[in-house]
Image (cartoon, rainbow, N blue to C red):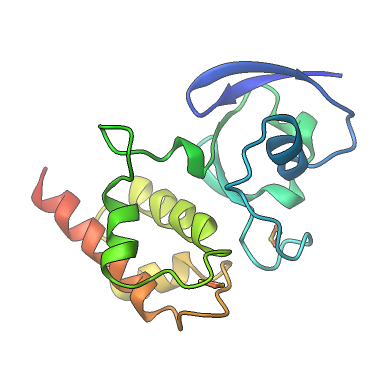
Length: 157
Ligand code: FES
Ligand code: FES
């Protein structure tokens, strides 16, 4: 079937079977491999993308459900110069990245949070990350990186 939607701010159309997930569509049909496959059953958040302004686990979304929607993946998160944005830079600065498998999903969760709550408390950041598992970092540095991003964006308003 033909699936048309907006992907990282560009209109796209793709022929794909109706029974694949959005995760498979992104990775295998658009080669957007920044979105990771961890558990495949909605438990880990490695596959998280932003769909119509909401964080979703793309392994739980059927590809046809994306029709007409606006999807942002980690490849759509960029700074003004096309390089890493401030959130991505802060993940590096705060040592929030180890193996990296969870990180695209963590950044999408952080961005989704700041879209709706630009000045979150640390507790709110932790709650926003509740669906994203990290086996490496212990979460502290990830929370630090998102908090620093929120504070600097607030300061720049
Ligand atoms: S791969 Fe989708 S939640 Fe784990
Ligand atoms: S950095 Fe390895 S799972 Fe999070």
